[in-house]
Image 1 (cartoon, rainbow, N blue to C red):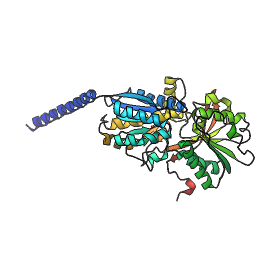
Image 2 (image 1 turned 135 degrees about the vertical axis):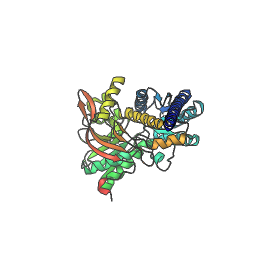
Image 3 (image 1 turned 180 degrees about the horizontal axis):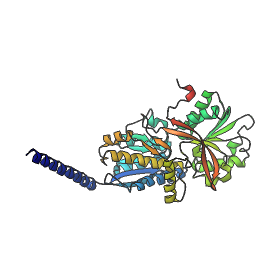
Image 4 (image 1 turned 120 degrees about the vertical axis):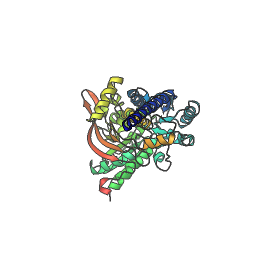
Length: 400
């Protein structure tokens, strides 16, 4: 009799498991698609980066077949044109008309700051894949805002320290685009460089979209300075690097720039003008790691080009979202559970080990790179690494 009861109990339990699995599958299939709104600048001064993020993000979703936990993912895209007022309009559309469950993207820090309160008031998770406005993961942080790229200045604290302690620069000129990101990155670089003992002799801030850097370049003192630090991204970066060589400065004063300025997507336009440029960034597509080699190979097969750091950022953003969705079995409607899962996301990204800090900003490696020719193409080759850099990074020689 006992054996019969045990058999009966096992049979009932097995039937229950089958019923639960079938019900869960049916529930997932019956649910509406998970809507993700991707907003980046597809046009305008930052369109190189915007389109790069788009490619990487879509590539991440394609790997998953646009599905997670049995639910289809629907991607809705909007062009913010790198303009805060446009971004506000587009975010309202995505949230109120399209009814997205998740927002992602944003390259322009001004746009990110402009939409912050809208996102928070509607309680929509926002995963920023590029824009580095510091306040969004510090004084204006919110449970709904995450960043998978970096905070402005995060990499530059490490870069300023490295410039003085490793490259032995003592007097430097700072050139940065005159908008939120430019000033935040420059401020952090100067803070670390001066704390180490260096001197900033000139600060130059050309407006975003500058076509002629001549008036700024001719004012640089090449006689008494060690090097020039610069942050000029997208099309501004192409013009800056080309004109830096054309004005004869490349032979007189070395450049040490943040990697946005010489991103791989820009190098084919810069050509030899970029060769030898030392820079730093959280990613390089030449990294010799299994995760990056797999990513680069698959990405090249898909797009017939090597991934830029923008593409890697988009890819990492998509992966983080997918892993969090898997953890909650696709139930994105449970916002608190999804946010909790997102905070715990950890995985091996193309850049290296990925995780969020306590303020929901990515902890990153900072790679020291040099523009070289690799197998006939222009590329950034890693020559040194500063690991585990967070937004409040302290140099190893200053830690207590």
